[in-house]
Length: 53
Image 1 (tube, rainbow, N blue to C red):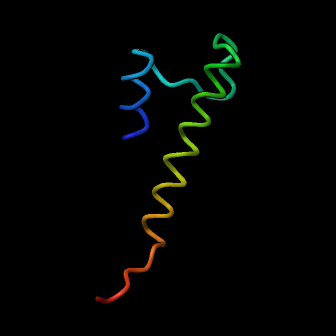
Image 2: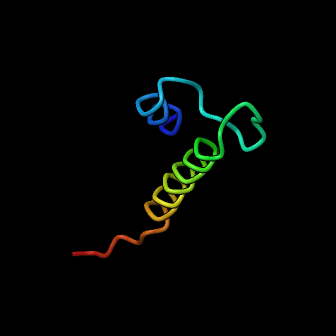
């Protein structure tokens, strides 16, 4: 959901899939990069161990 909201803020249209032939390579690669960055951040946040203070 966060991914779609961020894309909408950037482009004001639906996020393209890798197979969308009517979208440019730039749009598809930008969407994939954004998707990867959000996934990596979420994974890091869930895997991070909280150290006791």
